[in-house]
Image 1 (cartoon, rainbow, N blue to C red):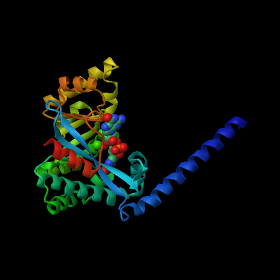
Image 2: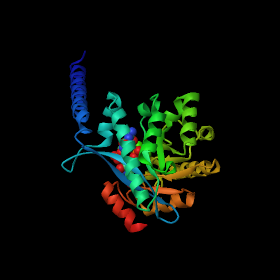
Image 3: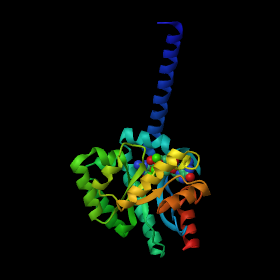
Image 4: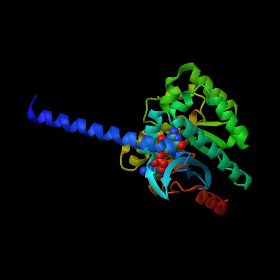
Length: 276
Ligand code: C2E
Ligand code: CA
Ligand code: CA
Ligand code: CA
């Protein structure tokens, strides 16, 4: 082994150890986060592309201690998934989102809430009965709950998955395919899946106004989804140009910093009260 290669190898293993340690640190702290009430949901508005009015909200997990963000979801959610902690955390998030959306409904500001579901939750044998319990317990109108699933979850499961999706939908809950375009879901598969909506990933939205090919692909996705009677939502909308393009291309709803960043439940409730 050459000196440089050996050095590179040592550097690499040191880096790996550091990463593994960081993950263990996060995991240890995360085990206590729920009982210490450090986790909360923030809400980001989804607006109607035509009227600009709030048409829904996505619930996004936050981990805060004394008002400071401890870790970002992209750091702690993968750890939660690997350790299985996503099961209690995801169950909590679903219950919490339904509770808060029920409050909006009570206040006469009924809008659907979207909750992200991780593969581990979705594959769990009890997922359906669990969802059913949460709905019954919260009293939320089932039409006001939407689950965001990823392509991989929907694609890989075969008949059992399709059956589960059907049951969930028959229960009245809406289903949305998240991060569309980044996985391997071909558009032609879409017609087989009992889903209501798809969310165009923000990598497409980001390049929309600078790259012609991205614009063409995005328009095609929207047109085909619409012809299959699926609703299309664009995420990560940051500029007026992106917004105008997506509206003209036929997106039904838009979500992104242009319309509002994720905010605390209190802030979101105030926003709702001020605009409806
Ligand atoms: P996601 O489901 O794709 O959520 C959208 C992410 O984009 C959110 O990041 C949101 O804050 C961010 N975002 C919204 N508008 C804009 C914009 O205009 N520009 C840019 N650059 N970003 C924007 P966040 O909150 O950090 O969440 C990251 C990911 O963590 C989520 O991606 C989702 O995969 C996961 N996640 C968050 N909450 C939950 C949860 O309750 N359960 C599960 N299983 N996963 C969650
Ligand atoms: Ca999502
Ligand atoms: Ca997404
Ligand atoms: Ca994502």
